Length: 306
Image 1 (cartoon, rainbow, N blue to C red):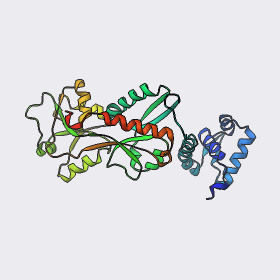
Image 2 (image 1 turned 135 degrees about the vertical axis):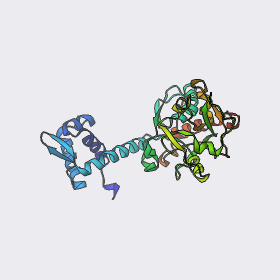
Image 3 (image 1 turned 180 degrees about the horizontal axis):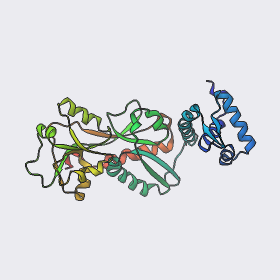
Image 4 (image 1 turned 180 degrees about the vertical axis):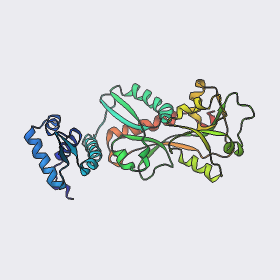
């Protein structure tokens, strides 16, 4: 494919056509007349050798290829938009723009709040938008990162992309505050015997793999798509949950739970900010990454967190 021979304006037309599924509405969306958008559709059909939009009754539906292109075109459009918005200079005190960061609710609670505070003080025109990291993060990381400004995630889940380290954390276990028979430590037998509450996704993969190597198979009774709900699902029950020490400290007032140390040397957690290489030399992203690293460096030593 020779990109030099392609009209990149067709990406804009293709996205509008696939999302609107109507030539007139697509043209209105991108500022083209109906004849001009019809001509663009004809060029796209010749290029892909596919109708893309097929008339069914009184409306259009996407062909099989059109359906495939729908998500890819949106990603390509976002990447091109970010590429051409790149800046040689960036003054945070004067600029007005939004950064989108993918993060778990743990990362937002522990780090995102501190980052937002620093941005509020230093760059009043900058907006942060935190979006939940999708389950597909390990399936097509490049596509995911191309549509975001950064991904907050610990080491050990993805690799092959640039990252800056933010802060360290450690794992502890939650038990109900009134749970009898549990001291300051759980035993490995307790981990296999007691019911668990777990976070549904695999961002803590190194810690999960470690349990497997120790021969512990958690007996999961409840799983939830939020780290912050773990204490509420442990309180008043026999359940246990593995959670980050920093988050456990933040959530301590919300539920009648207490933390206990794991019965093994738990693998530490190092949170990082990952990004797509297209952003590496962009002045705005350099500022964002440097600010994130500075904020992360101010967080307390995790060994003092309990």
